[in-house]
Length: 293
Image (cartoon, rainbow, N blue to C red; front, side, top):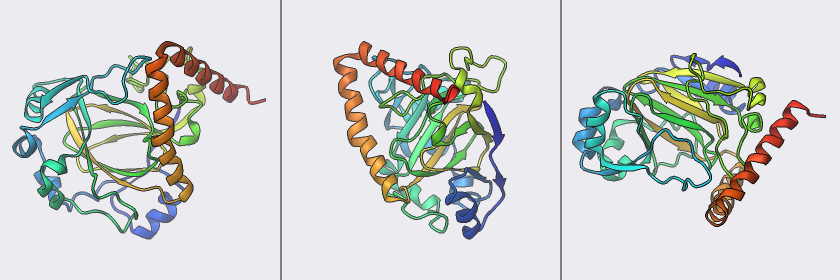
């Protein structure tokens, strides 16, 4: 993989952000965006335990999906308080995603400010909380609705690997899914699971890497592939903004309504054959990246 660091600024004005990052769809880390929010000092494990500790949540492990894995089905369930107790004790490879904590504790919306000066079209009904214990992993994927994301990290550090959408075939995208066949676990360590022998096109994939710390806000442009590893137990919120273009909005809708429906139907009716078909297609498209003519 050919990686470069994500550009990082302390602060940025709206015009510069739109001109140099939003319009050309390039990632950026803004270190001070969230530091004026009450949440920056207020949100911690004790506070989350206090406001939503009694709520039952779905937990997800690090196992990559296969032919028989239901889409977005949790691997276990605990109350939020029980989950926090578990991950505070040490490494715990369990995470929570797409949890709308604000439905259960709407007062939390007073603890941050929507950065409307940077982007328009925020989906303000659905700010989402993402939580992970030390060692938990969000495997390489892109967001199905093709939204632009501002992802702010609270508590702990998280390693992020990013690729533009157009690198999808070098990443061995599974057809009719938003996931990669390849495993990027520990991509920057000696015990990396990245298999360049099985997935040779990965060598030429061009992307970015960054370690997010408390208060860092990552701008992830629409369709960017991302893989995340929790170096320490922590949580983040994602503020989503609808794709700026009509074509992007329609493609995102098509992904949700058509692509996912087709994949779910065929995964249920012929899981083994369907997975084998997607695997062959993925390798064939990657091979074209290696031998374009």
